[in-house]
Length: 233
Image 1 (spheres, rainbow, N blue to C red):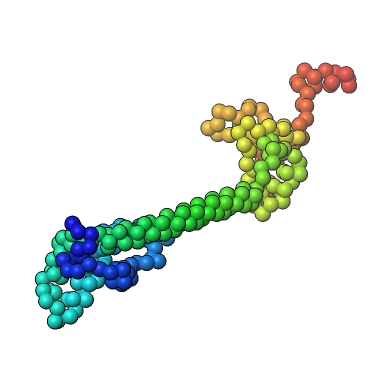
Image 2 (spheres, rainbow, N blue to C red):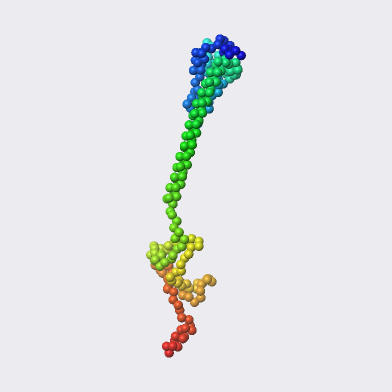
């Protein structure tokens, strides 16, 4: 195909007419971005030519005096593709150059977009790490001494002085609990097989509801009591 043959089969375009047609090509989405900020992909030479011809045919459709305007617009895609196959060589060179510039524009913008996305991801990760650290600092520290609970007399006094005479004490499994400084005496209850025979019955304090306690005392056996009585006499 002759390089000087234009899309309509008429005389060749001069430089000014080529530039005029190229100036008519305007990307309606120029500067637009995807929802995530990613730049739009570049246009190829064919895409640019399609936009140029679409603009021209649209203007012809708006002009009632234009011949065959309605028919050309009805078969817009087929008409433009047919003209693309017979495109003027000089115009094709110009379109290729414009497509190259658009691709360079895309490469620059996509590099900036990737850098911004990386920065945003790093900032989000940093904030998440800082938030986790704050939560860890606010959490109460565990004291190793809590593994053992000492039930001292002061602890029992605080239980007795509480409103209902009760106090909740949590003991971890395996905790070491020292022996109490006193002995709780329990009597033999009905239906119970775990009580010891011969000890005093359980007596509760009517104010605190706690069982009365007596210090651990060693009671003499019957033989010791007989020997002591014999010595006195």
